[in-house]
Every structure is written in C-alpha cells, then in structure tokens.
Length: 244
Image 1 (tube, rainbow, N blue to C red):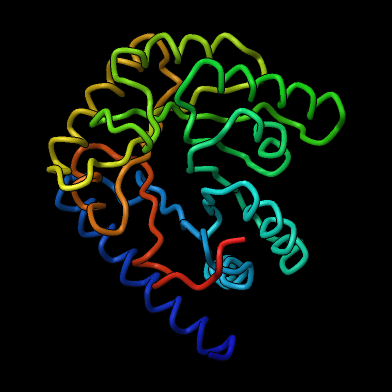
Image 2 (spheres, rainbow, N blue to C red; image 1 turned 30 degrees about the vertical axis):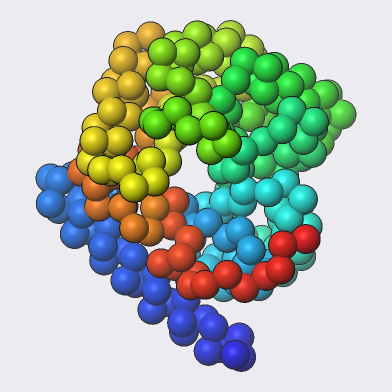
C-alpha cells in the first residue's frame, strides 16, 4: 500500500469513528467537543501516526514502553512541528518509570501507590535534568472486575491512591481510566466508573477525565460520561507491526 492509499484508508476510518462519536454524543445529549479521540497506535508504525497527525489528530497512545520509545522519536523526525500528546495506556512496571517519563505526557495506567511513587521520582529527576518541563499527568486505572493480570486499582482503594498522587508536586491527578470486563455488560461497567469518578471529584475537583470506551463499546462509554475514548482497531485496522 502506498502512503497515499494508506492516508485515504485512514481518512475514511477516521471519518467513520468521528461520525460514531458525534451520534453517540447526540444520543447522550452531550456536545461532541466533550469527548476526545485518543488514537491507540500500538503495533502500528510511526508513518501511520504521521498520517493521522496530518489528518488532525493530536493524541496518541501506546501500551509498551519499548515500542513507544522508538516510535515517539521517529514521529518527531517525520513531523517535527506537529502538535502531539503521547499517552501510556498499558500496564507499567516500576522499573520502566524513568523511561516512560522521557516521552509520555500522560500515564493512564497508574494502579498502585508504589508505581505512583516511582513515577513521581522519575519525573522529578527528569525535570531536574532538563529532560521534561512539566509534571506528569496521570489517571488512576480502576479494575472493574478484579481480574488479575489486566491491571487496575480496586475501587475501594481509589481514594487513597488519588490522595497519594495529588500529594506530590511532580504528578497531576487528572481522573480515572478503565477497561470494560471481557464478556461483561459495558453499560454496567461504565456506570460504575462514572460513580467512582463522581466520588473522586468531591475531594479532587481537578480530576475530571474519564478515559473509557474502545472500538467496540465507545457508544456505551460516551453514554456514561466518558471524556476520552481509546480507539485502535476501528481507526487503524488489523495489527501491522511485529512486536519488538
């Protein structure tokens, strides 16, 4: 596929996803401006990120630090003047905190106090070294089904973790993130997340982000207050890269 053909393919997919978002927002009596589209570019090349940037997207997500590191650098070379924001949405080990703070603007998968501490230290060191200018925006990942291996903080532990994050000058608490349980009812899951978010904002009014909804269930997420949908397959298609 030539770059021109790929751009046309991505443009068509983007238009379809944006149309779904507009319809979902209308059905929920919300403005389409209230919901951000986050392009999940994991397993896809930097050239696709560049094309999506050309088409107007500014927010991109990765779930593996090793893959993201090289892709972020390559994209910067392809589009040095592009406005962009990189999100880490995958499970993150503490020993990767230092590397992630070098490229991520947002980490959406903070699910433990120990990880928050590691990210705060890494961010402080990066700022002191001149490798980044600003604190790291983070979201608390909430486990909605308790499944081990998928990541996420138990709902009852969210307030304590949020307080931990808000208590450091190097992290900024922005909200919550969750993935709907496999085989479960997304409406139930996202209604639960909305309730958790509303309780969190009582003590942390700045934590307004609700990152929820993917290709298959974005309509349900929007109906339950999502402010950011994470879309990969519906936007980019099937997997293209071999994982490094």
